[in-house]
Image (tube, rainbow, N blue to C red; front, side, top):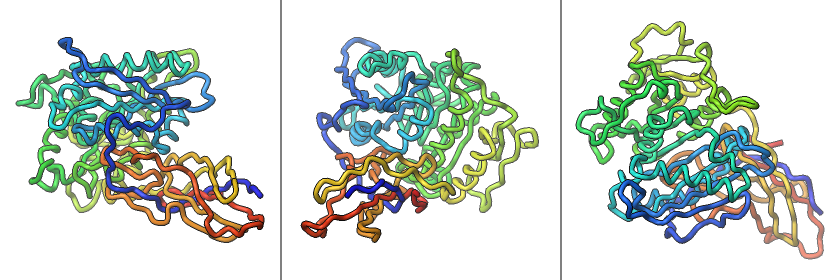
Length: 442
């Protein structure tokens, strides 16, 4: 007997990074689409092969934008990009705004020069825009080539996303730069620095890094991270840019719990900026909604943000935040990353029972993602799926997490086998979703 599916949340498995070879992909069948380009030997073009995978929300009539989830440098991080478009939490953000979710995967060999793709001027900008045309044709959404972009990038991906803000500010709704920024003329000693165009000052940007990247810990592999981020942030903010900085109090270069601030922050920016019906132009942020806080480094207490009109500190050392809700979330994030959520996740759907095999579908909770499922049989608890959550980088989630904030391979299925079901007896099942703060669906 089939029951209406219900969803609740427990804590799900995040295993250590599992690196697949570049020729091992999750299947790209609708609503997923993929293109691959070979390396070029033409000067100025991309010297590495690259895959682009896009997810298009089922049933969407016309896309309003594309959210780009860009991995970082190194062979392992590049391979992790193969699963970026399959992330249920990022899909929830894309679905809310009728956006596609796109994840590149550059085939950078071990120890190769990352600048050859993470600087978009070295051919990755052109390849990216070509992929939007080709994926638009494959998916039946040619508007993919012209809609605005919301960019998220880790490490070299942050360099790439920040560079795109400076190159194409009129196309970008917002950009989140985790542990990586592009070099500016103000950043001495960096090769090929960018200049700051006036239009880029109107693009919401958040610089995010771990305190162990040179903020409070001054030694180690990533100790130089803060100097570059600080130079970029200060140069932009001094000119009035809509830019902030959020320092993770626990991590180094790994992404930690940043998605629980990044996704709501991008949600707020997309809500404010995506073009209205009949328009192709991004809207400006409403200055009356902004809140401001001093940069928080290592003080024992966070100085609370205030409405922009009430802030009296130094502009170049102030954090721009899009609204009061995000200001409160930022305050919690820089304290302990434990951003609160009071709303339960969506309930699962399409529960099917065939013999003793259960399958279902579920959307992630926009604020807190998806941690696990509870299986009930005949009104009684039967199992947690997975049994115990693991995540070396932050809150455990159902799909597990790799270093560059993408699901592990193979993609974890929504599936459960009831090995204790009695032969010949009819059972009734329910599936309940649990988000990463432990709230259960109806």
